[in-house]
Image (cartoon, rainbow, N blue to C red; front, side, top):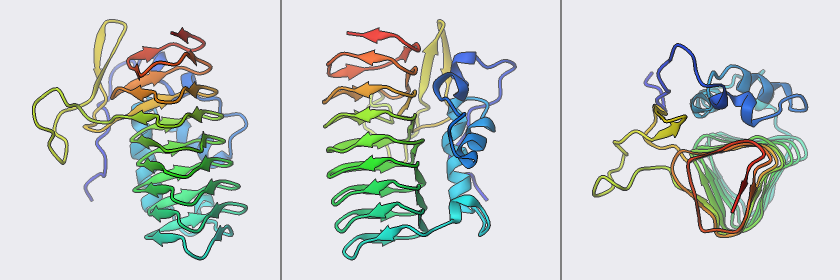
Length: 243
Protein backbone atom coordinates (compact mmCIF):
# COMPACT_ATOMS: atom_id res chain seq x y z
CA UNK A 1 0.00 0.00 0.00
CA UNK A 2 1.26 3.46 -0.88
CA UNK A 3 1.83 5.64 2.23
CA UNK A 4 -0.69 8.46 2.62
CA UNK A 5 2.04 10.92 3.51
CA UNK A 6 5.73 10.98 2.72
CA UNK A 7 8.00 11.03 5.73
CA UNK A 8 11.24 12.90 6.09
CA UNK A 9 14.34 10.91 5.13
CA UNK A 10 16.48 9.62 7.97
CA UNK A 11 19.51 11.69 8.92
CA UNK A 12 22.52 10.62 10.98
CA UNK A 13 21.65 12.90 13.91
CA UNK A 14 18.45 14.91 14.03
CA UNK A 15 18.54 18.30 15.76
CA UNK A 16 17.14 17.95 19.28
CA UNK A 17 14.87 20.91 18.55
CA UNK A 18 13.01 18.76 16.04
CA UNK A 19 12.23 15.98 18.54
CA UNK A 20 8.62 15.70 19.73
CA UNK A 21 9.90 15.91 23.32
CA UNK A 22 11.11 19.48 22.66
CA UNK A 23 7.55 20.61 21.98
CA UNK A 24 5.31 18.27 23.97
CA UNK A 25 5.21 17.10 27.58
CA UNK A 26 3.90 13.53 27.61
CA UNK A 27 3.83 12.49 31.28
CA UNK A 28 0.13 13.30 31.66
CA UNK A 29 -0.99 12.04 28.25
CA UNK A 30 -3.03 8.90 27.63
CA UNK A 31 -0.62 6.05 26.89
CA UNK A 32 -1.74 5.76 23.27
CA UNK A 33 -0.76 9.37 22.54
CA UNK A 34 2.48 9.21 24.52
CA UNK A 35 3.46 6.06 22.62
CA UNK A 36 2.58 7.64 19.30
CA UNK A 37 4.88 10.60 19.95
CA UNK A 38 7.64 8.39 21.34
CA UNK A 39 7.84 6.37 18.14
CA UNK A 40 8.46 9.50 16.05
CA UNK A 41 12.06 10.56 15.66
CA UNK A 42 11.16 14.11 14.57
CA UNK A 43 8.00 16.16 14.50
CA UNK A 44 7.91 15.63 10.74
CA UNK A 45 7.11 11.95 11.33
CA UNK A 46 4.00 12.56 13.43
CA UNK A 47 1.48 13.24 10.67
CA UNK A 48 2.29 9.99 8.88
CA UNK A 49 2.16 8.04 12.14
CA UNK A 50 -1.30 9.45 12.91
CA UNK A 51 -2.54 8.64 9.40
CA UNK A 52 -1.31 5.06 9.63
CA UNK A 53 -2.87 4.57 13.06
CA UNK A 54 -6.26 5.99 12.08
CA UNK A 55 -6.38 4.01 8.86
CA UNK A 56 -6.29 0.68 10.68
CA UNK A 57 -6.19 0.89 14.49
CA UNK A 58 -7.59 -2.63 14.94
CA UNK A 59 -10.73 -3.42 16.96
CA UNK A 60 -8.85 -3.87 20.25
CA UNK A 61 -6.86 -0.64 19.99
CA UNK A 62 -7.71 2.07 22.57
CA UNK A 63 -8.48 4.50 19.76
CA UNK A 64 -11.25 2.20 18.53
CA UNK A 65 -13.16 2.54 21.80
CA UNK A 66 -16.39 4.44 21.26
CA UNK A 67 -19.08 5.38 23.73
CA UNK A 68 -19.38 9.10 23.03
CA UNK A 69 -22.45 10.89 21.70
CA UNK A 70 -23.36 11.98 18.18
CA UNK A 71 -26.33 14.32 18.20
CA UNK A 72 -29.12 14.06 15.66
CA UNK A 73 -28.35 16.45 12.84
CA UNK A 74 -24.58 15.91 12.86
CA UNK A 75 -23.13 14.80 9.52
CA UNK A 76 -20.72 11.93 10.16
CA UNK A 77 -19.16 10.00 7.27
CA UNK A 78 -16.50 7.29 7.11
CA UNK A 79 -14.65 5.78 10.04
CA UNK A 80 -15.32 8.09 13.00
CA UNK A 81 -14.78 7.07 16.63
CA UNK A 82 -16.27 9.22 19.38
CA UNK A 83 -14.71 8.24 22.70
CA UNK A 84 -16.41 8.27 26.11
CA UNK A 85 -17.60 11.70 27.20
CA UNK A 86 -16.98 13.21 23.75
CA UNK A 87 -19.72 14.83 21.69
CA UNK A 88 -20.34 15.76 18.07
CA UNK A 89 -23.09 18.37 18.03
CA UNK A 90 -25.94 18.82 15.58
CA UNK A 91 -24.72 20.75 12.56
CA UNK A 92 -21.10 19.61 12.86
CA UNK A 93 -19.48 17.72 10.00
CA UNK A 94 -16.91 14.97 10.64
CA UNK A 95 -15.44 12.99 7.75
CA UNK A 96 -13.25 10.06 8.75
CA UNK A 97 -10.98 8.54 9.49
CA UNK A 98 -11.21 10.69 12.61
CA UNK A 99 -11.01 10.05 16.35
CA UNK A 100 -12.68 12.48 18.75
CA UNK A 101 -10.99 11.85 22.09
CA UNK A 102 -12.52 11.53 25.54
CA UNK A 103 -14.37 14.64 26.67
CA UNK A 104 -13.76 16.55 23.43
CA UNK A 105 -16.53 18.54 21.74
CA UNK A 106 -16.97 19.21 18.03
CA UNK A 107 -19.54 22.00 18.01
CA UNK A 108 -22.23 22.99 15.53
CA UNK A 109 -20.85 24.11 12.13
CA UNK A 110 -17.33 22.84 12.85
CA UNK A 111 -15.59 20.62 10.27
CA UNK A 112 -13.11 17.86 11.16
CA UNK A 113 -11.84 15.62 8.38
CA UNK A 114 -9.25 13.41 6.72
CA UNK A 115 -7.00 11.60 9.24
CA UNK A 116 -7.40 13.95 12.19
CA UNK A 117 -7.05 12.98 15.83
CA UNK A 118 -8.78 15.33 18.26
CA UNK A 119 -7.27 14.64 21.67
CA UNK A 120 -9.00 14.58 25.04
CA UNK A 121 -10.73 17.71 26.25
CA UNK A 122 -10.40 19.68 23.00
CA UNK A 123 -13.06 22.20 21.94
CA UNK A 124 -13.63 22.66 18.22
CA UNK A 125 -16.11 25.49 17.84
CA UNK A 126 -18.40 27.15 15.33
CA UNK A 127 -16.71 27.71 11.97
CA UNK A 128 -13.46 25.95 12.94
CA UNK A 129 -11.88 23.43 10.54
CA UNK A 130 -9.28 20.74 11.30
CA UNK A 131 -7.79 18.50 8.61
CA UNK A 132 -4.93 15.97 8.63
CA UNK A 133 -3.82 17.11 12.07
CA UNK A 134 -3.17 15.96 15.62
CA UNK A 135 -4.54 18.08 18.45
CA UNK A 136 -2.89 16.42 21.43
CA UNK A 137 -5.20 17.56 24.19
CA UNK A 138 -7.21 20.43 25.69
CA UNK A 139 -6.80 22.59 22.61
CA UNK A 140 -9.32 25.45 22.49
CA UNK A 141 -10.32 26.34 18.95
CA UNK A 142 -13.69 27.89 19.65
CA UNK A 143 -13.99 30.39 16.80
CA UNK A 144 -13.69 30.38 12.98
CA UNK A 145 -10.13 29.25 12.26
CA UNK A 146 -8.19 26.63 10.29
CA UNK A 147 -5.63 24.02 11.32
CA UNK A 148 -4.31 21.76 8.57
CA UNK A 149 -1.38 19.33 8.25
CA UNK A 150 -0.24 20.31 11.73
CA UNK A 151 0.53 19.08 15.25
CA UNK A 152 -0.84 21.11 18.15
CA UNK A 153 0.27 20.59 21.74
CA UNK A 154 -1.66 20.57 25.00
CA UNK A 155 -3.46 23.63 26.34
CA UNK A 156 -3.01 25.63 23.15
CA UNK A 157 -5.53 28.36 22.37
CA UNK A 158 -6.26 29.16 18.74
CA UNK A 159 -7.74 32.66 18.45
CA UNK A 160 -10.47 33.61 16.04
CA UNK A 161 -9.52 33.77 12.35
CA UNK A 162 -6.13 32.11 12.90
CA UNK A 163 -4.84 29.85 10.13
CA UNK A 164 -1.98 27.54 9.32
CA UNK A 165 -0.83 27.42 5.70
CA UNK A 166 0.48 24.15 4.37
CA UNK A 167 1.87 24.53 0.87
CA UNK A 168 4.25 26.73 -1.05
CA UNK A 169 2.84 29.50 -3.22
CA UNK A 170 6.10 31.02 -4.45
CA UNK A 171 6.59 28.74 -7.47
CA UNK A 172 3.82 30.00 -9.76
CA UNK A 173 0.31 28.58 -9.94
CA UNK A 174 -0.60 26.27 -7.06
CA UNK A 175 -0.84 22.60 -8.08
CA UNK A 176 -3.10 20.01 -6.50
CA UNK A 177 -1.75 17.64 -5.41
CA UNK A 178 1.10 19.84 -4.24
CA UNK A 179 4.51 19.22 -5.81
CA UNK A 180 7.09 21.25 -3.87
CA UNK A 181 8.51 20.02 -0.57
CA UNK A 182 8.07 22.22 2.50
CA UNK A 183 11.44 23.01 4.07
CA UNK A 184 12.49 24.80 7.23
CA UNK A 185 15.66 26.64 8.19
CA UNK A 186 17.19 25.76 11.56
CA UNK A 187 20.64 26.79 12.71
CA UNK A 188 21.43 28.10 9.24
CA UNK A 189 20.67 24.73 7.67
CA UNK A 190 17.78 24.06 5.31
CA UNK A 191 15.96 20.90 6.37
CA UNK A 192 13.35 19.06 4.34
CA UNK A 193 10.12 17.92 5.96
CA UNK A 194 9.63 15.17 3.38
CA UNK A 195 6.12 16.51 2.77
CA UNK A 196 4.50 18.78 0.22
CA UNK A 197 1.86 19.91 2.73
CA UNK A 198 3.02 20.79 6.21
CA UNK A 199 1.46 23.51 8.32
CA UNK A 200 2.85 24.04 11.80
CA UNK A 201 4.00 22.45 15.03
CA UNK A 202 2.80 24.38 18.08
CA UNK A 203 4.22 23.34 21.44
CA UNK A 204 2.35 23.10 24.72
CA UNK A 205 0.75 26.16 26.34
CA UNK A 206 0.92 28.58 23.43
CA UNK A 207 -1.85 31.08 22.64
CA UNK A 208 -2.21 32.34 19.07
CA UNK A 209 -3.68 35.84 19.02
CA UNK A 210 -6.72 36.42 16.82
CA UNK A 211 -5.94 36.84 13.14
CA UNK A 212 -2.51 35.16 13.18
CA UNK A 213 -1.46 33.39 9.98
CA UNK A 214 1.35 30.83 10.23
CA UNK A 215 3.69 30.26 7.28
CA UNK A 216 4.23 26.69 6.03
CA UNK A 217 6.63 24.79 8.28
CA UNK A 218 6.31 27.10 11.29
CA UNK A 219 7.70 25.58 14.51
CA UNK A 220 6.64 27.23 17.78
CA UNK A 221 8.29 26.03 20.99
CA UNK A 222 6.28 25.49 24.18
CA UNK A 223 5.23 28.42 26.33
CA UNK A 224 6.10 30.92 23.63
CA UNK A 225 4.29 34.25 24.00
CA UNK A 226 3.14 35.77 20.72
CA UNK A 227 1.91 39.35 20.78
CA UNK A 228 -0.78 40.34 18.26
CA UNK A 229 0.57 40.35 14.72
CA UNK A 230 -0.72 39.14 11.37
CA UNK A 231 2.03 36.72 10.28
CA UNK A 232 4.42 34.32 12.04
CA UNK A 233 6.93 31.91 10.51
CA UNK A 234 10.19 30.07 11.04
CA UNK A 235 11.41 28.50 14.28
CA UNK A 236 10.46 30.12 17.60
CA UNK A 237 12.40 28.61 20.54
CA UNK A 238 10.72 27.46 23.73
CA UNK A 239 9.81 30.26 26.16
CA UNK A 240 10.46 32.99 23.61
CA UNK A 241 8.48 36.22 23.23
CA UNK A 242 7.54 37.44 19.78
CA UNK A 243 6.35 40.99 19.18
